[in-house]
Image (cartoon, rainbow, N blue to C red; front, side, top):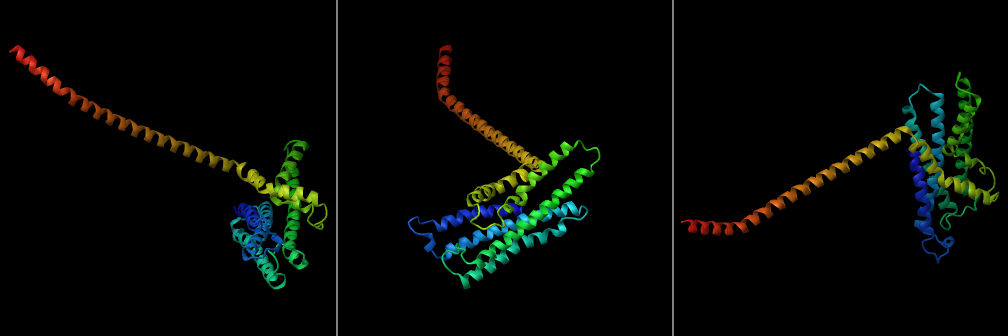
Length: 279
């Protein structure tokens, strides 16, 4: 849940930053220096940091489940939450203070000073490196578990399962970030745009698709909610149809009464006439 929240925050931060910095197309945003644009950039940096830290927490959590089978994960939940949100908050606090006192220029979106760059980039690279190590260790554990299975099929089936597990873990761990993590920003700029921005933009969608909407329990809950919604719609239809039927019956009854009242004088006259004739 916290990982998905970090993905949502990251997407919101991108739109917020662009909306604030490029609100006036006639103005050069590099010359802009307002509290709103600085807050938007700070929120953008915090969202990126939080997303990377929660990817790391997800990796640590998965490895904990694999290694500590008989230990309840509830013992670590609050530590995970505190680290996932507390660490990026502390980094952002240090970055904002350093910006204010050493490089309070523009909208804080220029990283020419190396200190400013590494306050943000350093923790991100650290999370990417640790997550990549955890990824390799998790693959090693999976290989060991597949080899230890007795009579579990051929080597090709084991290889397919391992390949599937590896591919599923790549978006969850953010392994694609390791490709350009330790290269200068100017190295392979075009390829970096395709890999980091392209894959990074769909990372949250892939994680949600693979680990949420493809989950059997989630699908079962969605089916239950769909059935409840359909049943509620059916009840509403029946109630509405029954109300209309009762209203139509009442209208028909009133109409019949009015017709009887109109016809009744004629009936009385004919009866009287017939009575006089008979007499």
